[in-house]
Image (cartoon, rainbow, N blue to C red; front, side):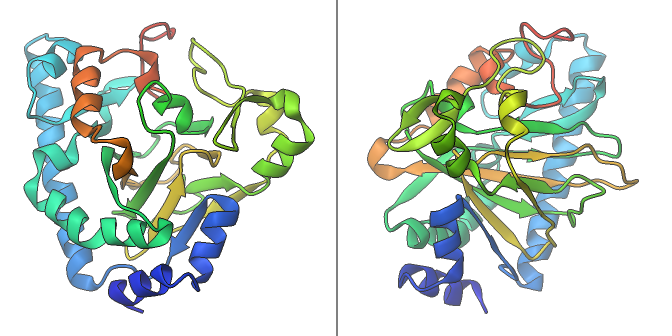
Length: 298
């Protein structure tokens, strides 16, 4: 099935992917990309990754802080190293702002899928590529809304593009498949309800900032979602998810492109303006293996 076929199927409301997304908050679309698109995405990831590493090396060579670099490089990528190794790139952000080719690809290929899935127009909210280098740290159990709640949109959808194959060994995504049942049966686990969607209680501050509290995460049933470079994963900002550390000898690169409803206004510029001004703010480091203000290593 081609991308255009999948868009059409999602739009007419009969796709199994749409039913799963509505029920679970995530869906896997197999064979979303043809070989040409896979080559394009890998090329853009290679180029952007090299650009991000050059920035990280420049900052370190000039003994600058990454916060200072972010404030004074408004059109460049935002680079974030691993907390355990400041020379190792954990992720880079501002992909669509820094790369016109990727912005065009997203507008033509990804936005129509999300619009068809949800029945309304969505626009970019933020983006990143997680590098998951060999030995790269885990992303602990969390809901994305814990990181986004201080901004305007009340609902977001993220598209994950696997630049490299993701497996259990290198830290593929895992989603909770019983979150609504856990919330319904344990109202004391819920910090707040956002338009009938539960936001679980989570840690505030410290190294576990944004993590779903341990006693809640232990009640969740997790489903691994391995992917190939032709797959597209869609998930919303309320489904709990996590990924383990990379125990393999190769990278597990994945782009995460997050969108918000057009009716809630344009937030991409505002998000990155605030992030550049407050690089170390914990809300920009929720459940990630990165250092931030208030963490033991930041």
